Length: 627
Image 1 (cartoon, rainbow, N blue to C red):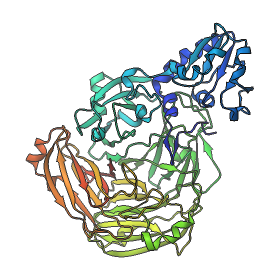
Image 2 (image 1 turned 90 degrees about the vertical axis):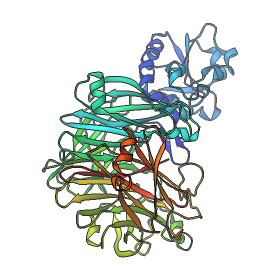
Image 3 (image 1 turned 120 degrees about the horizontal axis):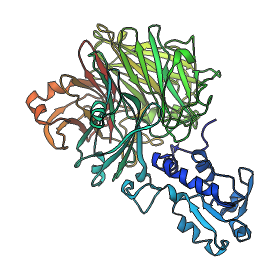
Image 4 (image 1 turned 60 degrees about the vertical axis):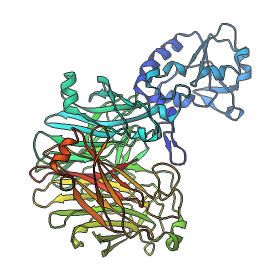
């Protein structure tokens, strides 16, 4: 059963109450609070905001003798086996303690203090409050800015390492001093270390490297998760980062995106293993409560048969789950649906091939709140192609590029899709019509076989094949080096691009209302001898400027611009470029230990992929983040 708490809604965003209750520090304080309540001879529960059930999910409350509410619409509710009473009847209750299910309890008690029984002891969720130094807005505890948190897959063992790279983008929105409170959990969920990272001055860059962390604190080898809490932020309550995985062996190299910090009921886009592969999902419990046996499961996409994990997973623990063990008989291009029940943030999976090479990527949130939007079929005259999912097409002589459409909503029983292949100058050179793909389809397209060189592919709706569209079009893009066999993969969803007209929040903007018609993308630069590349795509739903006006701003570790180069991308075209070809070695050396590039364009919205090239034909690739 999914956890009975709302974590995120697309119309209103994240629920700060969820993060306040599930925060690792709140869990420690909850133990003391519950012990005191349990020691009371009798206590009453007062639930003015209707959140007692949400609290009980993470911190099970002792049985109460009375359940009081303020909202008359809540009178039909029950907590455990106790029916709700209006709080005006509290004076007749024979209790020694009162628990107020809410933060900032003094404001809520002000309305009823004259009604309270004499000598009653007061408890509240304020006992779970974070220390003042972790609050961005102390006067408004449940502000989303107080809970700018995220989880990171973090490993340093058996020759495998991880590196987070980000920047102090909050300074662009008026933030002053920003820091990251970090807590590292081991595979068993036990705390390995807690520390704070200074994010530096405005738009400074920051690296957290597992190898350095392990050496700094003298830690044993670990595979676990890093909980990150950003303090002093403004503008964004999301912690964004690029995550590189690298190894002692030269052929170990991969990359993935920041985690989605909000747990979901379902995730999809997890690929089944090919004949020579093992697919491991890293199940990382994001909560201070145990995942019970048989509460986390997997199903072949389009199937009702769910196989569950028979063992419990401790709070904040990490477990490797092999897909061949869970769903024997499935194989690429089958897809796996993850029945997570809101117990993990967007998880990571690792694909390990027999040739010794591996890669890491993430599934995506499968929406449960969507239905077919028939209005999309009528937008052609205004929005042209409408929703576009752009994918990089690497040089076909060196790489095989595959695309696998992935159902990403419980409403998607059919996917009417076609693929358009473009060269670098924006000329459409090929088209492939998938038709209306069933939910359990097994059709992966080799885009490189249709290409005439480097470029990109766009997945769009094919309304001649069907009208079952909801605007949540996703796919997995897989890239294989023909010579080395090294593979990278990434997945993402569609958006409308570069239109002055808007439709239901599209074209999206990183800040402010739609349309989003400008670009600010973050490109981390990997340390030498690794080489960093970038694939920029200029997707156009209808028509827009014939060329982009793009600046590549090289910044040093302190966030200062030290070099600039200009780039022009044709509409519906793309550019594949390497940092070392644009900025010479002397300039890069002067940029410090953690330089980065900002891809800036005030005339259009670009979509980008970043990658790293290593030795022995190794490489990584994933989509970029912006702010």
